Structure formats: C-alpha cells, structure tokens
Amino acid sequence: MRYDWLTMSDADVNVYALDAAYEPFPTFERWASETTVDTTRYERYISSLRDHASLPPEVLARAREIVKRAAALDTGAIEGLYEVDRGFTFTVAFETAAWEAALALKGDHVRPLFEAQLHAYDYVLDLATKAEPISEAAIRTLQEQVTRAQSTYLVNTAVGPQEQPLPKGQYKALPNHVRTRKGTNHSYAPVDATPAEMARLVAALRSDAFLAAHPVLQAAYAHYGLVVIHPFADGNGRVARALASTFTYRAISMPIVILSEHKDAYLDALESADGGDYQVFVDFMLARSLDTIKLVDQSVTAALVPQAAQSLVAIDALYFTRGGYTHEEVDKAGYQLTQAFAEELKKARKTYDLPRIQGNPTVTVTSYGVSDPAYRLPPAGGRQVTITLGTKAPADASVSRNFQLFVPKAAAGEDDLLLQNAPGSQKFGARVEEIAPVLSGSLQMRLSIFADQVIREMLLELAPLAEKALRQKGY
View 1 (cartoon, rainbow, N blue to C red):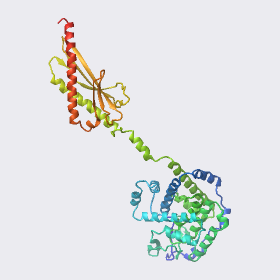
View 2: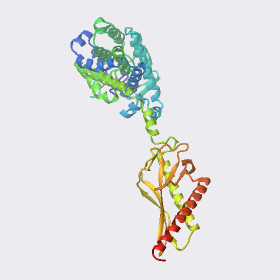
View 3: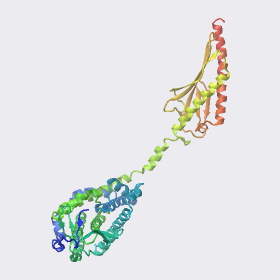
View 4: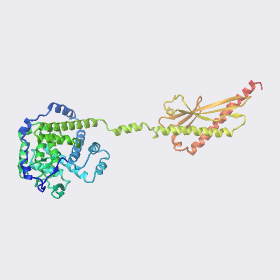
C-alpha cells in the first residue's frame, strides 16, 4: 500500500499539527493555467475510435466491457486488497475459459471485491450517460458501491492494527493522515474541514470552466482533488479512479485503465502534484487514457476478424474424409487390406503347392500413378502386393501379378479401397468400415476367395508358358 494509516490514538503523532499542515487542492483555474494536454496526440488516438462508429454496437460494447473489467480488477490491486499480474488481469478482463477458476484461486474475498468494483464502474457509467452534474451525494454513493464487499477496514491504534466497522457513504469521522513511502507524514483534509472541502470540489466540478475543459484535464483534476481531501475512512483511491472515469466515459465512452503495474509511476505522479507540479499527474492520466483508447481500438479491430472456432472447424474438417474417417484411418485400413491380401495369397499358394513351383507374395512400398481423380496414394507411399509364380528348369517360366493400393479420397458410401492389378483389370474392393478396427468376417472370406482365384488364374497362365519353354529346349 502507499501509506501507513495514522490515527489520533497514535501516541507519537500530533494530529492537530498534521491537520494544520493540510494543503488544500488548487482551484480549477490554477490547475488549468499550470497544465496542458497534448490534444494533437489525443485526437490522433481517438480518430481510430471514430472510424469504428458504424460497427455493430455489440462489438464496441464488448471492447468497452474488457476495459471496464481490467480497470475494476486492478483498482483493488493498487490498494493492496489482492495481487494480480498481467496474465491474471488478461484472463479476467477477457473472460477466458478459466477466468472464474483463476479468480477463485486468489481467495474467497477477491471475487466480492471485484464485483463491487465492477458495480462502481457501472454506477459511474450511469452518471456519465445521464450527463448529470457531479454531486456530493453521487460521490458518497460511489464510495458505498466500491466498498460494498467490505464490512471493516484496518486501523492502526495504540494497541496495534485493528479491524473496525467501515462507515459507508459517510465522510470520515477520524483523521486519516498517512505516513508516506519515504517515512514522512502526509496530511489530508481535517475531519471538520472535509464537508467544506468536498463542497468546494463539487462546485469546481460543476463550474463552466471545468465543464468546458479537456476530459483528461477534468479526470486528472477530479481524481487529484478527491485524494487530497481523502474524505472517506476507506476506498478513497478506488473512488478517485472511478470518479475520474466519469469524464472519460462522457467523452469517449470508456473508463481510464490504471493497471497495478503502473502503481509506482502513479504514486510518483501524485507526489509530484503534492509538490506543486501538476503537469506530471496530467501527463500520467493522458498516458493511461491513450493506453485505454488503444486497448479498445485493438479489441475492436480484432473483433472484426471471425472467431477462431469457425476456422478451427474448417481446418479440422480437412483431416476427415466425407465418410467421417481421418485420412490416417483410411491409410491404415489400406495397409491392413494389402497385408491381409498377401497373407491370403500365401495360404492359397500352399493349397496348390508343388515342389517344382516357386514363389511367394511380398508387400513393398513404391510409387505409381493414379489415373482416377477419386483416388490417391497414402502420403507414406503406395503399397504393392507382388506375387511371382515360376517353374523350375528345364521348363523355367514365370507369371506375375502386381496389386497396387488405391485409397479413396472421400471414403464414403461405396467408395472402396482398391487393390488393382497393374497391368490388368483385375481388382478387389473393400469399404473402410469392413477393415477398421478389424477385418470383418465377410471381408476375410472374400479375400480368401479372391486370393484363390488369383493363384488359379496364374497357374492356368503358367502351364502353357512352361510347356513352351520346355519345347524350345528340345524336350
């Protein structure tokens, strides 16, 4: 946290001296005269938002919801109510699939605080939408909203830190001067001066000069004025950041996002303003406004690209055939078919075994052409079942069959895996469902019949060739 709280019960603290040391916030006229906003840069940034004005309302609403959630989450982290990091803020702000689980891991107390802060930003948006002048009642209600999940707050007393009931929607009843990070004491508005100071702040926020000012200048002044007064027992920083967002909501329909990673620069800028250099804080608020604008712009631009789910489905579909199989499943079925066919040829060969006939089938990986556009080769290479039957000398002759595997591209309906003799028209077809995950009984019988047919046809062709070879040798 930025400061350690001091109370009148601290024996070593002269609260009256600290009250007397309070430096009131400047008038808006002084603030405006001593600061400037880089309007050229600001306008260049918001021009991109104007380009998105014709987009569907839900696209812009989604982008602004992301910004609001980031602002609401990190405003509590800046106060040390819980810890965040970039990944966590992204997860919660974008409502990714695991955001609720990630939030739960931070502890049971975090979600109620986050939701209270969300409600506070919704309240601020409502104020901005109605374009009503800021009132003390509205600021008190804002403090109620932002602290709705808290029932107590920590107070340092003479006997040590204690949790005390947190008054909501009421100005402080005890001094809340603080000890800075540098170990020095810092004064906020005395208790009895707080109502008058708040009345003065609200009057400034309703003045013509303020209402005509640049929204960044408005946001910075409203924020600074409230933290200088520190009108509440707790929640002042969160109220100040939400109040500042009222003016950016009115101008560009979004809050200012101050992330926890900006905390050191944020506190340094406030301390510079305490020293009279208001420009540093205005520049800080401008930078955060520009960050927010670019975040919304990037979110909107990204939203114009179709969701990944549709593309993922389309890409995934590329890996499936029309029959619902993956290409790998079809290829595997083809390999199983060639191997099963080779085994059946071996069995058939043994059925007609003669000592003078030699040859057994082999399965090889090879390349060959595909003439039918409905078919393809497996990426790992074609499969070919080759069998050569030959007769021994002196009647040495041989015949061969080369059955090549062709894989159907669609693998649906009657699109069969094919084993086709090359050259020749002899072929065997089988559906993928007959093979995967195991060969069906009927397919096994058909393969057996076909293998027997092939062997018999080869023997029929081999007999006259062997006779011719023998005669040519003079037998």
